[in-house]
Length: 139
Length: 420
Picture 1 (cartoon, rainbow over the protein chains, first blue to last red):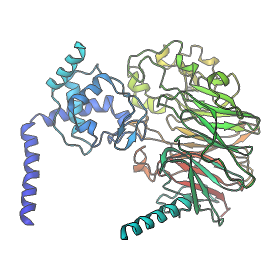
Picture 2: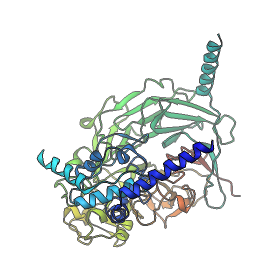
Picture 3: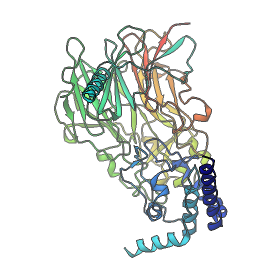
């Protein structure tokens, strides 16, 4: 039993460490991302990322936030106005496109959202945002 | 054999549950009411209890926004007169908001259609699975899709068709996107439509656009004293995020006012071109249409509110109190249920209460006051997701009590005046 606990703790600790080691820019990106969030996202998604029931979806542990980063980047670039189920609910308000945000701002705010409100996921990089924006321009 | 027996037991349980559910009335929130009033939990955990209607025999009909166990309307019945529902009966295969009782019929709406059910001499609905569809194919683009209803008792039903938009911008809720001129939404939404009660399958061509320039009305009621329709409007959002050069967070938290109107046939309330500034006490031009927070344009020609309430509180129900049980102060006054704000963020949220407006001859007669409060369950819960309850529906019982529904905790309260 103890052995399992030990292995478990080591695994958790190493995952946490690998996060910090492989993502040395995380704290700085989070700090910048919070500013972007407070300006452009907070009103609808609220201070705690819990959103507004049936209007604006939560950002807490949803597949949209924690899943495919390309999809997530495209939600910022193109907006989102479809009836989809998120954590068992449907949401009415449209998400406006925010293409005026720079690649750095988008990378930072998504990194912030993916690592706040109880979320933990890899950073979104500027290169990833740039790639998606370029794809959109080619279309 | 054992398996068959288990299935049989399960089926029995299911049937028993469906027929007469014992209602759990545990309620962690204690409402704050004026002295002499008490609240009883009629039922809770009903799901998204939107609007409610009470029949002359005391049965409470609750419209659910989303189906629960496949049903969208719940009838609550109190068989022993203690105020607590001891029977539930569910029917209707559509979610929605609107519900009302008038002249022997129950009316209920989905986000597209309006149906009605006839009561028999025993106050029972016989055609629970086959209502008459009196209105169909109304605009439903998710945002502001709920179709609130009220009736005048003279053959007409009034249906809100909310604008699927915040401010009629070319790109909804998008900074820098201009307002559409004229706003095309107003042809099929952003107003109240009047239909006949006894004609099947009416749609836009059969109805009358009774009042326009209303962004979204969830609370509306026919005032039998004034013999007119009254409505409450959800004002626009996001002045600060869409126009940061003109409005800061604090200004957005107070603008625009939520408005309470008398809505006479043909009136125009100004959305999307104008909004009501409760601080300057006048209608001004929307920034999407050339406004700067001060310019009036022709907004002075639009209808002005009877009462302006704090911004973003979300008036979801309106009820004129015609009863005698609350005393002269309340007679013919208006109760308004506020769902609770989200767009005041990052400032403190507000609403999550039921307000009373004293009225005389169909006009406000004194300042409004908060009648019922603490639905959210404490200051720390004063956000839309954390609030334990969000007031959404109001109705008066034949015994002069009022009922309040909540679409977050699924609770229905009965409020009585005991004088104690």
